[in-house]
Length: 448
Image 1 (cartoon, rainbow, N blue to C red):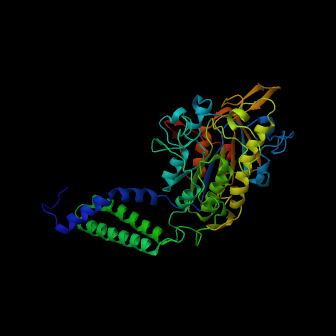
Image 2 (image 1 turned 45 degrees about the vertical axis):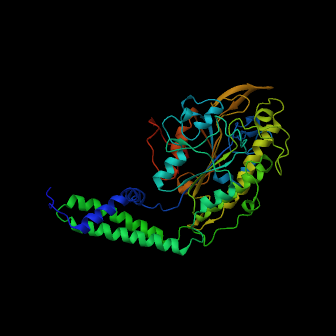
């Protein structure tokens, strides 16, 4: 292909400008390429440690239907108001032989210590061109820091420290979109317009090189799409919603275990409203961490004077206090997040936000006293045999991807949870044939 021996000075400068903006343009092209989905899906992931005592949580009625009061105290009963949105999985096991509390690092990656995979929230967010937010109600010792089993999310090959402050989390979730400074948005529009003009001029100067001109056309279209997106209101909310639970924590150290319940509520509140507004599409909330020994007598909590890891999950008789602690955590999810999402979607008024969302509730082990991460029948304490499996609950319609809920799906025994991760990705519009080099398949029984 022949080129002139000397390029005009303006073409050289335009090429320089294109070189400077190349990486953002490539990112913009990747983000702009997929067609916008008909319904706007959101994903919320909530991790709770130490599994559950299944004699109080297994919700299978005598006729095989989903009944949150079928066992013991009915541990999942806070989800009863949303039963029609629940897809309940039994028989799932942690993938790739991940075991014990170390399996927290496999929970969202699919591999012990993460293998070579990023966590599913990051994989999905990258494909959608959005931010994967990681929040944490994680009251660890500020001096000693996290234990070796503390991290849940892995982004770009690095383990992510969950954002502890609900106020900082709210700022990050909403960004500058509600009430954004007009000057900032005007500058963004001017910068995009300038870059578009430079690319258009360079494209016109390369009439003798049609292949290169076509490449520039892709860049130009990406810039124009980005400018159009920037011109639209980035949030469905005219202003940032009130967040009373977040505001109530002003001046409080989020690592102060005394305020654990309030910190958890504030994170859930901020995430819920950001999802309603469409300001956040992918949010993960880490509730405590593996081996967290938080005393559950904190303010406005369940009033259980015992530590969560050794004092509750490891005790085999009685197990009601352990069940009450886990039930309280499920209850906060229902009260502070699900109740907010159960309203008309401002981005799609024909459905609720919960219809257009996928809420994934999980743990790293099956039952706290056994520390297994498999699906199996075991003797536990005075119980001769107890069917245990990895907690895996999906709530919401996944923007039409899931069948109507209120169903129990019994998968083949010890089906690896990495298939659940692939199914979640598919519900968000991201099809995966493998995770970390391992083949995965969607769970067909979940699909509409």
